[in-house]
Image (cartoon, rainbow, N blue to C red; front, side, top):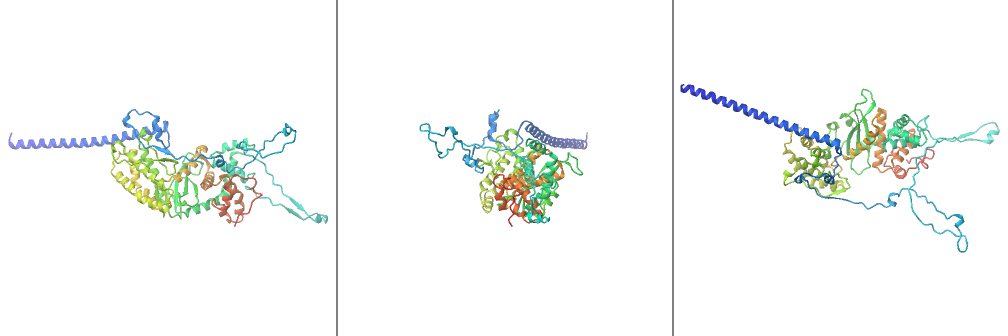
Length: 560
C-alpha cells in the first residue's frame, strides 16, 4: 500500500471516528433532553398525585398550623423542620354585661305567696323591702307571623247628615309594598335576611315559614325579592356604585355561579358574580356584587368606568382592560402558589400569616445560611411571610407613616426576593415553576401597594366577600333566572355593606323597604339619608330589631 493510500485511509478513519463522536454527542444531548423531560413529567405526576391525596384525604384550605406537625410521627428524625414558637394574644374575657349590653331587661319579681305574708311570731302583715337579684337568663321569643288588616276610618258630619247631605273624611292607609300582594316590608326583609345573610335556600325558608304557621311557596318568596329589589333597592345600589367610583382604592374579585334559565347558555354553563369593595381609606365601607354571564375583562371595564385610582386584584389578565387605573396585584396569591409547590409533609410545619390574624407569632426569618436544608418553595413562602409580618406591624399607622415604613423596611426585601427569583432554574411544568413565573410576570404590580399607604399587600378584603356569597351558593346551588341572580347581587351588596358598617342587617333592609316607596314617589330626594353611613340610618339600624315602633303606619319623615 502506498503512502498516499495510507493517508487516505487514515483520513477516512478519522472522519468516521469524528462522525461517530458527533453522533454520540448528539445522542447524549437527546438523552439529556429526554431525561429532563422525564424528570419534569415525574415531578408533575408526583405533584398531581399529592394534590389528589390532599383533596381526598386532607384539608383544602391553605391555613395550616405548626401544631398539626406533631399529629404524625416522623420516620426520619433528620427531616424534622423546626419553626419558632408562637403565642396567642388573649383578649380579656367578656362579662355578661358586655355580651348582653344591647338586650332589654325585664324583671320578674318572685313574690311570697299571699298566705305566707304574715309574721310567724306576731302575725303582723309584712311589708316589702328592696328586692334581691338572684340570677338572669336569656329568653328568646321565636318569630311571630300575623295577618295585618288595615281598616280605613270614615268620618261623617252629623249636622250635614240632617240635611240629607254627606260630608266625609277618610283615613289615609300606607301604600302596599307590592300592589295586590300580602308582602310587607318586614316579611320581605326577613326573607332577604335569611336568604343572603344566613345562607338559607328558598326551600328551607318555605319549610321555616310553615313551622311559623304560614304557607308561602318558594316561587312567591323569590318573586317578592326580585320585585322589591328592582323597584326599591336598585336605586340604593346605584348610589353606592356611584360613591364607590369616587374612591381612590378599590378591591376586585370574581367567583363562579350557575343560572338555569339564561338565553344562549345551557343550564350547566358557568356564570360569574363579580365583587368590588372599597379599600382601607378611612371612609365608610362599600361592598358591591354584580352578576355577569362571563369572566371577560369587558365586565370590570364597564362597571369601573370613570374610576381613576388603584385597583387591587389577583393576577387575572381581564383586569388589564380596565382603563385609567393602576393595578396592584395580590401578594397572597403569589404566596399561595409557593405554598402549593411544597410537599405535604413540609406544609404541616409552615404557618401562613395573615395581616388581621388574632394569633401573634415571632418575626419570620428568611433563610440565609444552610440553604440545603430548605427546598426553594419554602424560601419563597418565607419572603412572603416576612412582608405580611411587617404589614401587620404597620396596620395601625397612618397612611403616610405606613408608606414611609414600607419604603424603609419592605423595599430591600423585594429587591432580595426578585434577585433570588431571577437566579432560579425550576423544573419545567412544575408547580414551583408556575410560582416563579407568577412572581416574574407580576413583578411591578405586586409592588404597586408601596406607592400608597391606603393600598393593601393582599386582596383578602374582596376574597372575604366572595366567601360570603359562596356560603349561600353552596346551599342554594344555582339561580333559577337572570332576574334572580341580579336581585341576589343587589341584596348581597346591601347585606355586606351593612355588615361592614356595623349595622343591624335585618333592620337596615327593613328600613329601606319602609322608606324607599315614599322616596321614589317624590323623586330621588331622601335617598342620601338611607345610605348606610347617614346619621338617620345609624340611629335606627345599629340597635336591636324593632318592627313595633318603626312600622309603615308610624313612619317619621326623612330629614332634609
